[in-house]
Image (cartoon, rainbow, N blue to C red; front, side, top):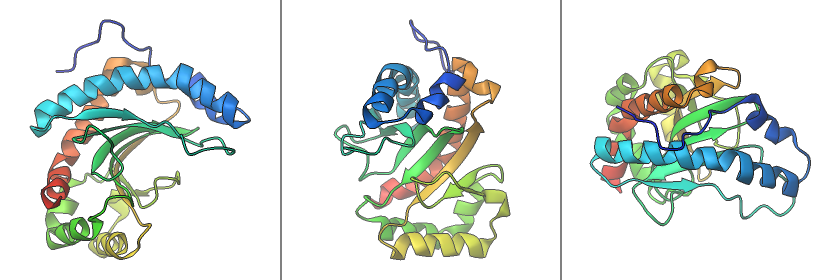
Length: 216
C-alpha cells in the first residue's frame, strides 16, 4: 500500500504539460527543473521504494537531465527507476514521463541496452508468456522519442513477433510497453491515485522485467 510522503507533490496539472510549449532551451529547461522535477523526485522516490519490495532488487531513481541538449529544447521529460545506481540507459528500467499531451508509464528497453539481442530472443522464445502478460489496454512503442504507440489489444501474435525481431535486429530499435494517460485525466491530479496507477502498471510488467534482467 502506497503511503503519502511528508511533503506530497500536488499532482501533474495543465501547467506542467504547458511547459513543452515554452520556446527556447533555457526557458523550457528552467521550467522542467523547477516545476516538474520536484514532482518526479517525490513520486519517483515512492515508486522506487515499492519496486524494491516487489522486485526483490534495490531500485534507484534517476531523473533525466537532458545534459546533451545545446540548442533544441526537449519535447518530453521523464524519471527512470532501475536496479543500477549509476545509470539506467544500459539496463531494463521503468519510466514515468510527460509529453505535452500525455503522461507515459513504460517498461523501457532502449537502444543503449547492450544485450538487447539476447533479451529479444528470450521474449521470442517465450512469446506466449509475453503476450499473455500484457493487457489489451496497454500500449507498445519502438521509439521513446515518438508519442505514437500501438494498443496491445490491436497486436496479433505476428505483430508481436515482427516487433521483437525488429528490436533484435535493428540497432536503434527499442521496446517500450506500458500505459498512457491523457493530460486532462483526473488521475494525474491526485498523488495517491497516480502512484497507485503507476505501481499497478509496473507490477503487471514485472514478469517481463525479470525475463529481461535474467538475460543480463
